[in-house]
Length: 113
Length: 115
Image (tube, rainbow over all chains, first blue to last red; front, side, top):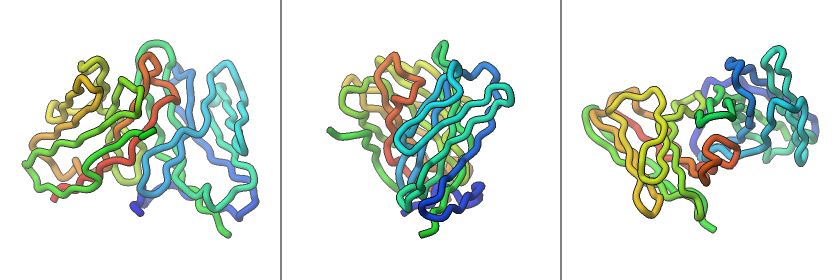
């Protein structure tokens, strides 16, 4: 498959452990945030989103935490599996108006079996 | 239900040439956005089409142009190619007015290499 990026920050996690991927955003006006997963040779795939009126949102095996004070977002993956190996991007936008998503640079998650 | 499909998947061009990339949105979607993803970077917004018109544009030169057809499919054209245009070009579709929500569905991209 194709390599999405060669010089991304990398997180290596043992299979079964929990993963935490962090993201700092810059736009104080952003109030809607999304995490995407991009596997090699594929386009980004929606994982979970959160609006600024929430601090935490949970999905299946994933949790997103939002700290608006320090403009920080994190994605927690429980019981990481080999299939979770991918590049993870956070994206932000002000939800009012028609402003495109702005993506971060991404983090490569490698799961060690 | 077919997702977002893009063509070609890979192509090689030389500097100064022109390229056209194609995208068919997910069934039921009427809004198409194009993103450029350089190696090691997140996707960058190029422009968005809805009702056959460019609705928004990112910070890209006029060499980048597009079109949307009545069947909602879209093309991205890049003229006078530069080495720096080498990237993965992603198409994403959604249903207006969900243009900037997580309801964006991405295709697998067209990998352009400019020599």
